Length: 522
Image 1 (cartoon, helix red, strand yellow):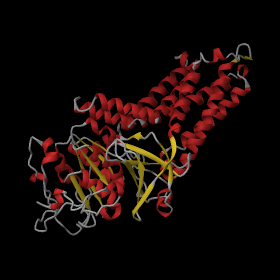
Image 2 (cartoon, rainbow, N blue to C red):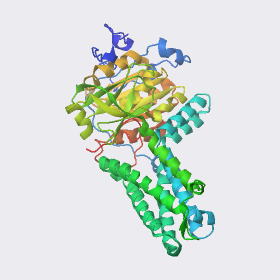
Image 3 (cartoon, rainbow, N blue to C red):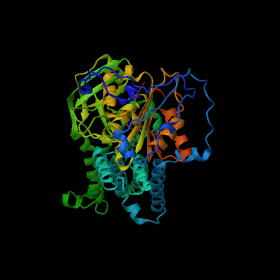
Image 4 (cartoon, rainbow, N blue to C red):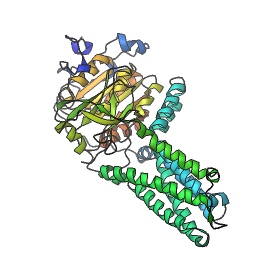
């Protein structure tokens, strides 16, 4: 059997130091085999697959073929496309937004007096939930709760539901944020309809708060966020902070002004009895808490090629986490998947593909320190502990989001499709793969050496059957993600892919939105 498959190096490997003779990152192929990819039926369907993880080596035979002619894209049914498009994110958004608009209609028509009287509390309650859904501390606690209490023993449909919910919490964020803006507009209009009993200061702050919140919300629209990342970040963050200050002023003015006596009630005890005061307090805490973990930390940057920077940080991490990094303490943060051998390892790594201004600067002018949040946020891969066995499918720099799951669990199979992975990503990443992932659960496809990309769905279906997997996690670009998601949905394979909330032709500079990558200005 091939020495490559046995994975026994001739010299000691130390990927932590980045000093490793690169090993071939592809499975051996047999030129006598005519099929472009031999079916994985050569794998024996043993009932003792759990033991096979560490005791058995299986061989996949791949033929070297010239690059085939492009096949016409398979037509996908509209029902499959609809199910992929109307995902849990959009279901959450539809529910929260519709629920709020029904309440607003009832309040405006006089059928819900509470909504009309306490519109301000409903405004900040919506903003409170919107911010909570994006809070790193809340996210980590939610993932921890789900992974602790529901892993492996619950029905598969329930575990898939848990993963879908935590991946798509952004739908609640968007729905509540947009609803809060509309409720705020309703409250400001109501104030102007009662000019005779509303103080001018309350009217002015209502308008200013509405403008700040609207600008912050509009800057987060998909087109702005994905084509003008820096514009989105500056306006959504700094105008959002201004909106928080304005909200505090608006709430305090509104709660302390007595419209009956036309006087100010400066009694602090009365103020804290208003529910909008506490909702605003909660919103402030949720915004400020993640920034308490911002630190400037030393880094080592390895440049294995002109396309990639491997950033090394001290201390290990659990799998499925993402880290934000920046050259500044408050500006231009970019998120990348974290690679770590274990929570107790000496180092963890980020892979930054050279795609835009920020990542290009990492290669051209490697920094000695970077700003980061010490409390990392969880991605969908963090729920891999829910499943007995799974497949991690990735392309290119998507390995940054995928690798930790396979390094830290022997029950996850890695499929990595790319071009010259060894040369591009260097000995550190190759060393981690060869050290921790046996050939029985590894398929690396070098599209340049093998004359083109493989039939991804054919490979995935065969590995899914062989590995007896329960779920597939996908990290790829827009087209790759769409093709695999459509194929999995059609084949009835449970799969979670990268979230894309836009469709565009020029997509190559944008990577994963939700799972371990970054979106930055080209």
